[in-house]
Length: 116
Image (tube, rainbow, N blue to C red; front, side, top):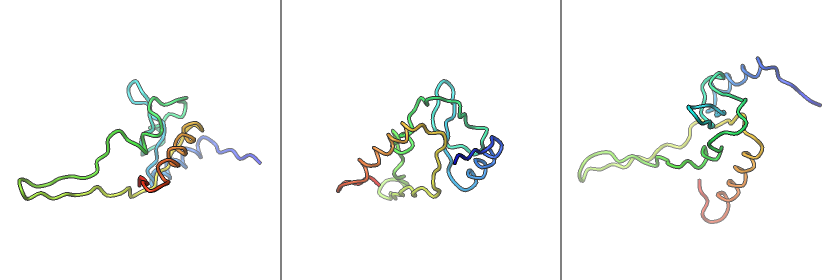
């Protein structure tokens, strides 16, 4: 049995999801496209066939803030970054992108050196 959602109801669904979750979707930024966090449906473009930056950059960013050092001289304080507070929802990912993330998940989530 096939179910279809209308464009208008899909737009309303995405708007509702943005209220509760960190929602990522394909977006155009200058000359390239990537999965970007959106706050409203009209920020994304589901007509993009392939993004310039792959989906995996959401899970394995090139740079990542791990902590902040505050203070001066011998009076330094290390403040770690808090974990993600909201769950993520990714819209518009192609099946090959999802498979790639699944393979990476298998690599980084097994063995003695799990990457949290």
